[in-house]
Amino acid sequence: MNSSTAVGRRSGRSCYHFGTVFDKGEARANSMKVPVWNPAVEFLEREALERLQLANLRKTVAWALKTPFYRRRLAEVGLHRPEDIASLRDLRDIPYTTKEDLRESYPRGLLAVDLEQVVRLHTSSGTTGMPTVIHHTQADLDAWTELVARCIVATGASRRDVFQNMTNYGLFTGGLGLHYGAERVGMLVIPASSGNTSRQVQLMRHFQTSVVHATPSYLLHLHSALMDEDTDTSPPSLRKAFIGAEPHSEETRRKIETLFEIEAYNSYGLSEMNGPGVAFECLYKTGLHLWEDAYLLEVIDPDSLRPCAEEETGEIVLTTLQRQATPLLRYRTRDLSHLVGGHCPCGRSHRRLARIKGRSDDMLIVNGVNVFPSQIEEALMKAPEVGTNYLIQVEKRGALDRLAVKTEVHAALFAGDARVLSDLRERIAERIRAAVLVKPSIELHEPGSLPVSEGKARRVLDLRPAF
Ligand code: ADP
Ligand code: ZN
Image (cartoon, rainbow, N blue to C red):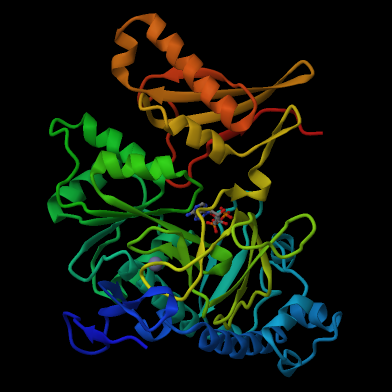
């Protein structure tokens, strides 16, 4: 379908291609060239992609039937053999798998292979309770690495880059996931892990880091740290950042891009689906391409469970299509997003998700009004005076809920007229009220005074008593 030329720096496995782009899936070559890792799969025509999905779904059901959990679950709907799946539509007969199912199957109720075949396990970071565990065979890790390599190359990063991975290297999947993908691409990888900001800065300067991977909140913190240095500039070698692991707004991305003078790409993943490498933005940033040969994507209304239309926000549901050790069928991620319509100018056939709005379980109900922290962030970050860190706090005052937003603002504001600060407080409060229909009280803080997280930021403090 597309012509490609390998331009890899090393011989052996072809590793870096420029695919010719086709507009809207038609055989009309676009004059632009986009970097591609695996053109054979990334440009696969819809029909061929669905044939591959069906074959992989049957394999996945066969693996799932080896686990006590799915044997029982699938028998309840009369599914006993992989051949019982005649088409992709039959997926709808399979029951959903939830985070609770994973927790109840902890530690090995979902293991589909002999323990000797397992080479690694990862757990989630446990943001919303007890962590879940995912086991991997070597083939699983290889497949995961391939997906991450595709993501990296789709952003235009290449083996010529120096990649500093600023996410945690432990059980959290962000560290090792990106690490192996970047090595597969052939980048020079600095496994810096998270935290130790002065060391991060030193590494960036000494080794001319050109691409970083971090949570958006950590990158904003890192920028403040760079500004505190005498040099007062971000490293000139830096050109790209992969940001993910936590919800963030378009305004936050723009802030990162402007502060560092770089391009920032959204990376989505969850440990239940390996980790990073599930969906990623390409050079065009028109949504996150989800690798549909590896994951079957559904978006559903979380209440009625009916499938959502394109552009309609709902819960992302994913089925693994390549994972042997821990197959997951129709896993309800609780993450909210929608499918982006139309075609991406890059020409990839894999559909795109809009940026994640948050989790269905992070929604706050404040005096009966549904409020997503991401809406507050978006409104907040539109104010140019706002700095890089903030905290949302909800508490009970008598019968009513009280919403407070604490945010850092530029230091110079504290030296001037007190009226400037009170005007700013009012402006921010109004902006948030317009976005979420609840007017918060606003506290303005000096840079560096709110608590900083080195991994996923904890932005919401709900101090209301639990009933
Ligand atoms: P935990 O569920 O304990 O936080 P994970 O480390 O597996 O454990 O985190 C995955 C979750 O992080 C996703 O389900 C999603 O809620 C969030 N997440 C990951 N990447 C992004 C992103 N790019 N934008 C928004 N949220 C994200
Ligand atoms: Zn694209």
